[in-house]
Length: 174
Image (cartoon, rainbow, N blue to C red; front, side):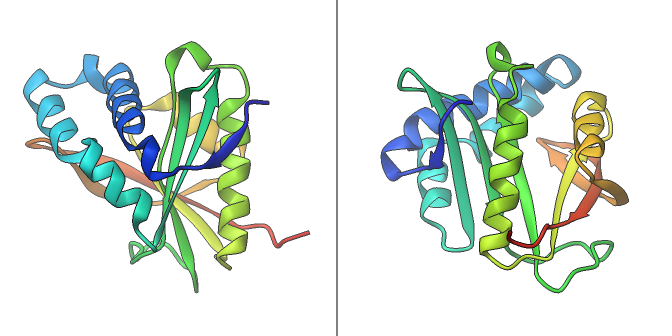
């Protein structure tokens, strides 16, 4: 198991680079260069990551190996889509693992840490949006108890894409 910790402001630059790299690796071949560039410019800069790390209604978790970031997750507590039935929902906004680390259990460990953070924040449901054309992620989420409850539009640059909304109960603290 690789260590997972809360991100600090000093992680912002490396987090921005990892976020853009993993997003491009995952979705670049299925989208236009222009839409990918626009999305990355408006989502993953160092300044944006610094703001998200500091946001009181967000939690950013990172995993590293040898001082290099290899995976991260960003959680958010805000308005959930109407299809998410919960008293205090928490969103797993992003969860990405560098390609070289796929299949090594890091996503599972990161997800477990995300759910533990949800417990700490007294969330009763965890929800997320996943691109309908990402079967690997959908299968992963289903395997750990997420179920499809609806969909919403995710604007990737100028391309309005369909994200499947999935949710699962948050386990009570043990």
